[in-house]
Length: 206
Image 1 (cartoon, rainbow, N blue to C red):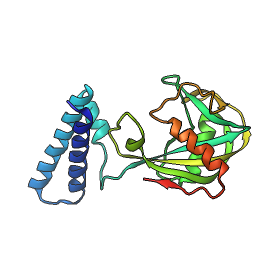
Image 2: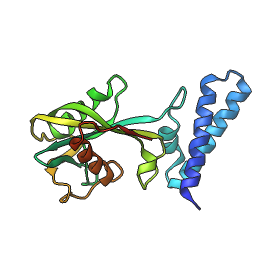
Image 3: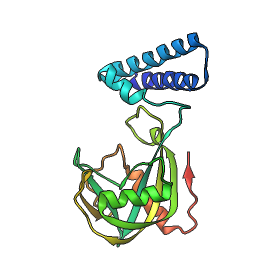
Image 4: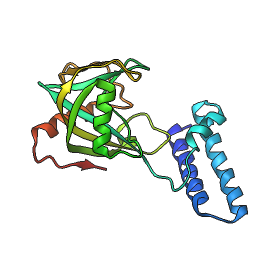
């Protein structure tokens, strides 16, 4: 079984049903689209071996028109090294970042994430890339995700213990620790250095 194909089909059914439920008023259609949504959750549970109820809570929890989720990643380069934080859950390293809060702009969100995860104040300066996550990562995600990669300038601060990360540091590109590639790829780091060196860097987007 090609799990990626089944994942795509489940996501499409979820997308169709959620969008339909946002607009349809006919009670029979509403019942049908709820069933289609339930089928998408059952398919996802079959693919992932997770309980159906857990899948429904995560995969089918949205209302309104289906849109991608947005995350930011901060590229902070200082003295030739790029800032990485060690994730508490798996011990792997990634560029600071996370979901964009509903009440924050991309600029404010990326600054907030660096402060929360690394204890550092930065200034967000330029966009590097806006990418479709599933096109750039080997592992597929249940949601469509847009990753905004932002070049930031270090201002002040040092690591502060927190609930999300256990350490941070600036690493030379040829001495990187094990990356949590579900969040940060070697491509992200390469693009960050290229953008830093090019003041006329054209924003890359899918």
